[in-house]
Length: 84
Image (cartoon, rainbow, N blue to C red; front, side):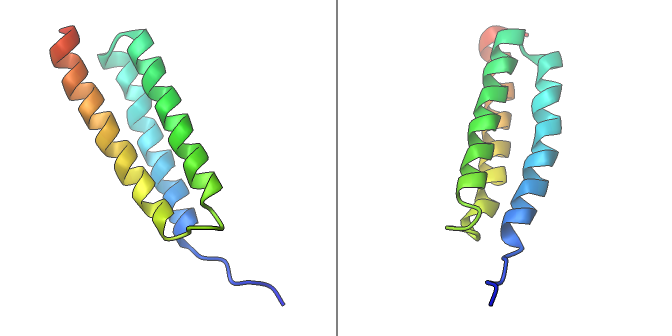
């Protein structure tokens, strides 16, 4: 018998895809090295979603929210600090 697959990790992957668009827009707002660092953070958060896919399906939905908060803090804070 197969285990039921939770829909929450799929929702988290959709959220991560949506947030990826925002992370891509950061290349127009931040210096290239800061945007590249931010993209590496996104990739690490995607790895967390994929690792938690079966073990913590409900917790995966929080990762795109965290990714959005990290993006917002990086863009707003980076624009103020770096002056771009």
